Length: 404
Image 1 (cartoon, rainbow, N blue to C red):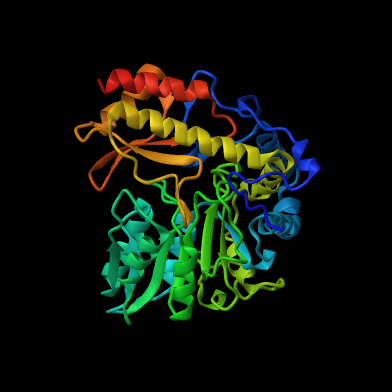
Image 2: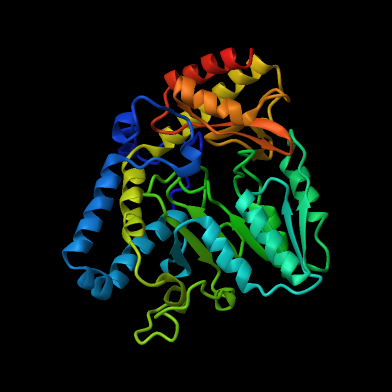
């Protein structure tokens, strides 16, 4: 069974209850930095980083054996571990260094035509907006960004707003499962179901999802899904995956054509053959994903998620009280939970986000993103295994001084 990591869920067995919860001592983070930006690049636990370095050293002992004779089997084992975690078949999943690269492969495989439409929201990740704008402009297609006003209200309202933009020309529905700028978990299941029923390609950017909020690809009716493993899963940097439904895999063309194309030694999945081998590169981040899965599953990760969720909500409430501004969403509505362990919090309209971010780090040693989305100043906080109440306290004290 995949590990869905249901926020607020209890232990599934007595053995889970005996598991420990990781602490900051399990990570390599600088003790002099208040690290509240796990959402950008994650943080790798010591044991996972040790395995990552062990794999690199093993390769250097005989690079020809490692890359020439063992790589296929090693990568297959790592893919199997990740696939089991997210509820997928190993041969329907391939590794990419990041979701941006993965989605670029998909987008460039579509061969968009004049009049085609890509429907999305105005909450999408900046790199993806740029990718779709470039490709649609070159093809004479249209990139339709549906405004989702904040505060969000219900899942039903979200679904109907997005679906109202779909037309007979819509070729792709592209959605974040959990947004980067606004840190909102979107209710994507119903939209994916509708898209599939209408013959529209459903692509989900789940960069922030694995080991953060529930994910079971067997229950999500999308065609393509990508997730980062170096964020909330705590794998080494440069480790992500792309999953594709078997019937859409033949249309996906590799970004790099290499030995897997017209393979002399084809494996059980042409999809994997075409995309996995891109020439000589460091495979250790992908192989260490197995250690990241072990780290998460050998600890009481449900407790990590539950406490991270509640700490995030407490932090948001304290900062909202400080600023007098409202939240971008409720914690949950009767039909959906909008917040996981990540929240974007409003700041006063005149906030200089560049200066504030710099001062928080330079003066207080607090690592936290501060940015503008749709001209709204936002601070985004991440709370996970290494986060403490002291970290949140330090941020609130600093903001009280800086926003005064």
